[in-house]
Image (cartoon, rainbow, N blue to C red):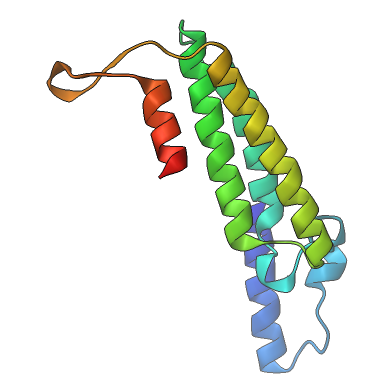
Length: 142
């Protein structure tokens, strides 16, 4: 979807610069995907779909330890919240704040999944044993 949107947008820019097209057709053609987003974040709908796919796939990764899968999901959720807070993709500020709140609630729930069954030990480089939950809490606090 992203490459189709980008190609059409670039072709449209070329036509507008050449004077063969007076008004933009991009928002009319991709209205269902771009109307809610600001003009400089027209590329966010594929990211939105990808983040949902990631949050569906990560808990189903074939790792026997449930706590590690919960940790992966929490890290993914943290990255999604960070990306959203960096881009703030919606046209209206209230939509950005509400989406941030919902994503933060999802991150909080994912964090509770880790605290319910924390991973016990992770063997790092040089056979140093690390408590994954302790490292995660340190990263949050840092």
